[in-house]
Structure formats: C-alpha cells, structure tokens
Image (cartoon, rainbow, N blue to C red; front, side):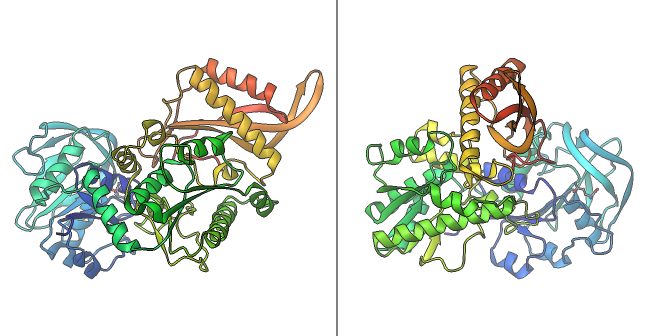
Length: 514
Ligand code: GLN
C-alpha cells in the first residue's frame, strides 16, 4: 500500500519547511514542491491533501506566483495559508487588495468552533499574523469562519469543494493552537490515518536498501556527525558485511574528534561497520591553500571527499553504492525541493562531480528532518550522547575559518573551540544552546600583551537557540562564562588577541559563521 502523503506547494514563504514538519509531527508524510511544479506531477503523487504556503508577493500583482484554477478541482482538499489563502480567493474570483490595517505578530482570532478545521480550538485563540494584504471579498461559495478586530476574513471555507483558507500561520509555534488546526485538516478533512512512524521507517528502509543493494558492495562516508552515523548504522543493519565505512579525517574536525569517532565506530567500539580511517589532512590543506570564498571552499572540500572515497573504494575492490547522510533541509536549502533561494550548496547535494565512480548514491535519510533522524537513531539503539550531538557541518572548520585555510589557523580555531566547550560544560551550559562554537575571523587588529604590541586575529564565539535551524536567535550566555572563555582563549591560543561574541539572529545571519 502506498504511504499517504500531503503536498505543500511552496510560494516562497519563510516558514514553508515548518509547514511540512508540523504535518509530519501528526505522523503524516509530507513533501514540499515549488508552485512551478506541473499539476500533472502533483496529481500523479495522489496526495491526500494540498497546502499552499505563504509568500512575500501580492497575488494580484503582475507576475506574482500563481496556480491554475484546476488545482482546486482535483477532488483533493486544499488549505491555503496566508499568501496561499489570498491566492485561492484571487484565482476563484474573490477580491484581495492592500489591507487598511496590516497585522504583524500575535493577534487574537475569533474562530467558529463548529467547523471541522477549528474543532476543539478555543473560540478566542492567539495566532501569529504577517500580512499587508487581505481578503476583502471571498470567492463565491465560501463562508467566513474566523476574523480578528482588523481582519474580516481570518479564515474561510467552502466545504462542498473542500477548500479552506487561513490568513494566519498555523505552522509557527506562536500560533498556540496551530498544531491542532493542522491536525484537524490532515485527519478530519483529508482523512489521513497517520502511517508515518519512525519504527516503520526503519523497517521499510531496511527492506528497500536490501532490495536495491542486492549482493552489491556499499561504501559509507562516515563523519561522526548525527546524520552520517545514523545512515551508517541503518546500512549496517540492512546489508551487514557488504558495508565498509570510511572516515576521512580532513584535518578540519574539532580538537580530538578524529580519535573520538574512531573510538565509537572503530573495531574496538560497539558496532561492526568495517571502519577505515583515512588521514588526508595534507591533501585538503593543499587544495584549500589560498581559497577564501566560502562556496568555493565547500565545493573543494566536497569534491576532495569524493576523490578520497574513490581511492579507498578502489582499494576495497569493486564498490557499487556510496551512502551519504543527506537530510531533507539540505535538499530544500539547495534549491531542489521548494521555492527557497539557494542559501548554500550542501556538500551532500549537487556538489558531486559528474565523474563519480560509483553505480549509485544511496541517501537513506534524504526525506527526513533532523528531529526525525534523531528518532531513527534512537530507534536503532545509537547512544543518546551521539544522537543529540551538536550539528557540525560536513566541510567542518574549513568554513569556520573566514578567508583562506591554513594548518595554523585550523589549530587556532580548534583550540579556541575546545576551550569554549570546556568552559560551557564546566558551567553546566553545554546542552543549553542548540549549537555553539568558535570561528576564526579573518580580522587582525592591534593589541597589547606583556607590554608588547601584538597584531593578531580575533576569534568569534557563536551560540544559538533554535527549534529547527531554519530560524535562530543568539543565546544569552552569562557574562562570567564569556569572560572566562575570552581570558583563556587570548592567554592560551597563540596569535589570538581579541574575542567577539556574535549576537546576530537567523535571519538575517545564518547559524554558521562563514
Ligand atoms: N504578501 C502577502 C501579504 O502581505 C502574504 C504574506 C504572507 O504570506 N505571509 O499579505
């Protein structure tokens, strides 16, 4: 039986991945597609429901992202959110225009709780709004089912056509009962039963991998990060002795990390992964010499990875498949899933040279969000310590060094980062920020040390809180801790004479500092 699926059609809003995540939290599988996707393709996927996202445009403007009227005649329930709601009305003959009062932030919404959509929701519920336009006149056949003091149509429905429009954003956590509203849509309106569960994911993945691999040999790129560790253990469960895991120490890992990875996944650890460690530091430093542009560094590191694997593969004999720990946000952020602009190329996605020597790439986690990967990891019995490890980018410290990468700079950032982590742990704060690290800025400035002038580098410290890494805010690390870290770094790390703390949120920043 086919897995039931909800499709999110992306009109460029910033919360679109969140929509998909919320649906999956209801145990229903969900995928994101650009609004440019051919309707025939959407139809062929036999979705149980379709959700149209928000977006920055005004639907009545020339050239604004749109959809054909046929979308609403597929016989599949459609829920429009914000831009999606406005577009639905616009396309079906309603009137959308600039609102006399724009709403931004938390707003109290009066909802009709006798509807399926708002069943069990509090009549006056706090929602999150972000709009300049509004639905002035609904398309015919629609009935208003929610409003606010300033917004006459905060939601509308046409039950005979199974069409629903919501002006606010149920996907963001500020909308207190948003999850319930999406749950109502997915279960009571689309008729889903909820067949997306992580235990069945492990089972079906293992079967699918076995079918695909047959007697073939599999090579897995293990970095020690959460994604590749989960991928490796999943593969070993599926094809056991046909798997070899290669861990490339590219010289861009955190301090001592290479040895730690070897301890867990190596021959003396609890898993049997046919673990091979390649010490390729020199090669990477050589390739990176003089390269300052972050995208170029990512590409070089990604390609060199593949080279090293090819060589390892040749030593092992014929290898048919290469495993990578790509996850869904990598796919979407690389511009392949939805409508979001290419923010950065992911080393796992699109960065592969076309002369790769393997029959095929296997990406068993390609459909999963990070929290789902962690659940799969726990399902597979991987220790919590590993499963909840801080995210670390594939290109490693290569992108946490602004400007060109040298061995000396790598040492500097490794030492600074180790001090930062030590002091955070000592203060009992190491699990609080969702990610924190030191980066080496390319800035040198004058300082004074032991009465002598110095002209040295500045280290940047970053710590962020985030639910999903799509948005983030800087953590408020206690001043004393920052001071202790700073003192130790300038004292213990040579050629560093200044420490800065980055308080930029994402957006406009990113979580990484590159
Ligand atoms: N751009 C539209 C408006 O301003 C939709 C906004 C949105 O989807 N968040 O109303």
